[in-house]
Figure 1 (cartoon, rainbow, N blue to C red):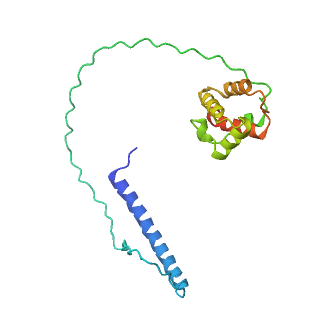
Figure 2: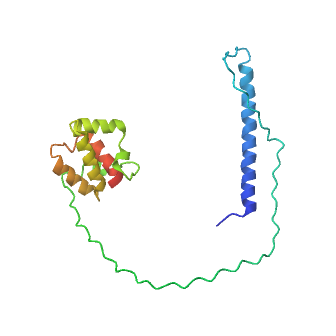
Figure 3: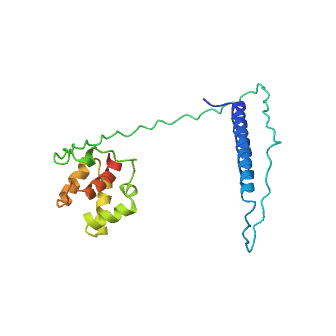
Length: 193
């Protein structure tokens, strides 16, 4: 439901009144601070910036003008042009992917059950710079190209089980219970759930 012009102006008026009250509060706090620093010498600067002119809103009045209600005739709508019949091409059903079986060995690991954090559209954006350095240094044996290729492939995976299967095939030496793998898998889960 849209607000009327009167309601919108009333909201602006309320916000402006709140801002006025906040400005007065800040000015009184500033006046109190000026007294506290009265005995301290001011620092000497080579070039002092020009002071900005303060704007006083205390005398500002806001009024809500009612718009006169007039019965205006609506403009006639143009006649729509007749549409040509274009047959739609037949819709081909996409093949249903076969479900990837859950890896029984990893089914109860903490990185499967813990909450991964905020979802991301790209795994790279869910990995911090320090974590990336840790992953490349430990999991990928200082091979940035391998890391980059792996992340690209994992971004294309459709499910966490598919990603786990790929990791188990490509990196059988990884200890799936280690802290580093836990952090890596949590970063993957931010995209693949």
